[in-house]
Length: 411
Ligand code: C5P
Image 1: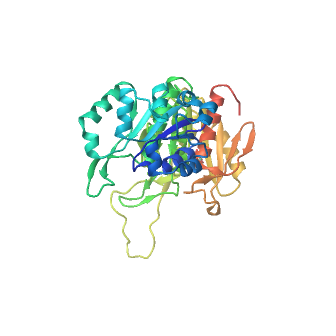
Image 2: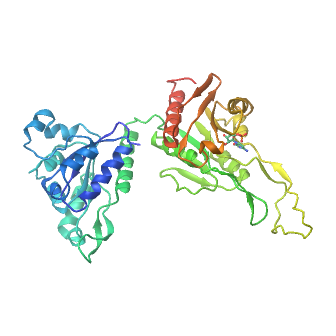
Image 3: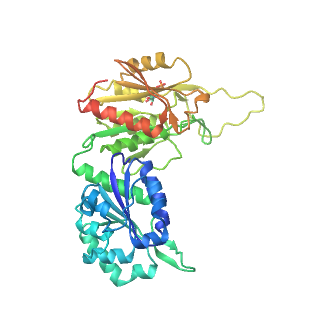
């Protein structure tokens, strides 16, 4: 998440400049304001018109632009933002930076700035390998400039390949996020800094025999989004997740489990936590005894009787824990009917502080989908939230949890 962050994007002159258009879009999608600066070379590859349209900002191009100098000035451009991103960073721009040359707006900003700088180099592999460029790279790294890439692969020049391609926009966005988050953490600006948040996510699989299992349709999207949101808020995050088809969120301790019993054990060993959010769709039942051999048809035409037994309730177990109950305990209630009555019952029975209730009838498309409509049920009442993406639901739950923990709000 980059909400409220301002990024000066310096685009220098290389064929990779076309990828900067997508990069602007990706940064804006995450809530950042992107203020573009283009060198003369960049304008040979892409137009200020396209950059201005995508960023919805004035595009700065010249050092001696009277209007811009009067209005903003290169010194303010260098100082008033959270981060300066150079993408693509050409060999020429890196060389100028290394030597303190300031003969255009981009290099003047880079010389005047006291903000963090991230560069995504892009150039021909021979130019990258050249000792002059490698020397400049070392000089710049020593001065604290961070680098993303270059990646290796095919070049625009026919038949050329090697290290020199600009990193993909999403990789650059990830590097920007890590850098900004690191600075916010250092400055103690994140609401969950120093806190431990424990989250369960996904379904559990309960074996019937060595080849079959009981499962459910939980995708883990909401739980994983919560883990990312808690990490963005500065928390140390432990994510205990059942079998899902999702990548592990970055900078989160992920414990992968299969069954409810394994999930309970992983949760208990991960305590204590300041906040626990139990978003997993834990199977209510497992086989009373799991066979070691595959169950076969016996020829009688009758299906086998599957004897089930109840699984431990993880939320209730930690809700009633004498010493290790987290300060804020949040459960989910996925229901297809009597949503709020069921949610209130769970709040009491499991001794949770909040229940996030959602209607998972197939018509809602919530199970497996990207959007969610939730009701936040607590002892002080029920709040109906509008439909949002699972990412936004996660951010708002985490923001509310941080406020509650930090004493800013009571729910
Ligand atoms: O009772 P029900 O399964 O509907 O309760 C849902 C809430 O309880 C969720 O937060 C879920 O993660 C949690 N739960 C649990 N262990 C179980 C069953 C549910 O932690 N065995």
